[in-house]
Image (tube, rainbow, N blue to C red; front, top):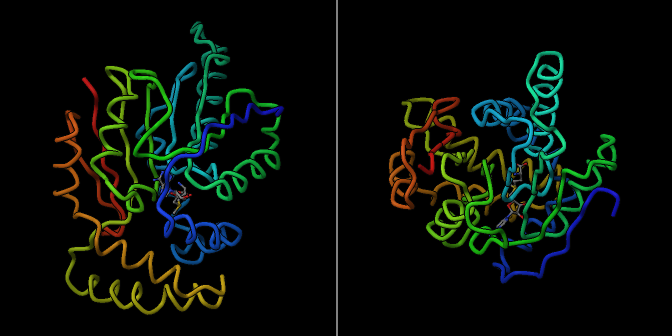
Length: 260
Ligand code: SAM
C-alpha cells in the first residue's frame, strides 16, 4: 500500500491474548485514556525522549499496533531533522525507518487507520508487520532502537522476547520497555490495589462492555516480575547498563539497556 505495509507470515500466537486484544482493539484508545486518566500519553513521551531518536535510524516498536509510540518517534525525528537542516548536519531523514510489529492484525489496523488520519499515508518510513515478539522476523543487528510499551507483560515467554530484542539490535542499540509495574509506596499501594481490582474492571464493563478482558489485564500486572527482577532478566538477556525509572510511584516503570 501507499505507506509501506508489509505482510509477514502469521506467527504462532497465544490464543487468549489474541482474543483479549481483538475485542479490546476498537475501544482501545478510549480505554487507555480512561484507565490512566490520560497519563499514558506522558509516559509514552517519556519513553521516546529516553530513546533519543535521530534521523536515519532504524527503529522497531514491538507490540505497537496502535502506532502510539511509532508516531512519537517519527515526530521527534522530524523535529530533529528540521533542526539539522537549518544547521550543517547532513543526516538523511529518508533513511529513517520505523517498523511497528504486533501479533494482532486488529491492533495493526487501528494503527494504520490512525496513520492515515494523521496524514502519514504517504510515509514510506513506516511499516506495519504482524509478528510475535518471541520470534521476530528481522535480521540480527539490524535496529538502532527497540521499544515495547505495555506489551511485554502479555508475552508468554518474556525471556524469549528479551533475547529477540537483543538479537535484532545493533551494537550500541538501545532497548526500552514501558510497562505497568509494582507500586511499593505505603497507602498509595492500597489505593492503587482498589483502583486496579475494582475500578478498572468496572470501567472496562461500562466503557468497553467487557469486564473479563480488563480483569485479565489487572491479573497480568500482578503476575509481572517487579522492577528489580525484570532488570535482572534484561541483564541476563545480554544487555548492559540496565536501569529503570519508576513513574507515579511504580504504577509504570521504564526499563532500559544497551547492547554493547
Ligand atoms: N504499544 C501500544 C500502546 O502502548 O498503546 C499497545 C499496547 S497493548 C496494551 C498490547 C499489545 O501487545 C497488543 O496490541 C497486542 O496485540 C500485543 N501483543 C501481545 N502479545 C504479543 C506478542 N507475543 N508479540 C507481539 N505483540 C503482542
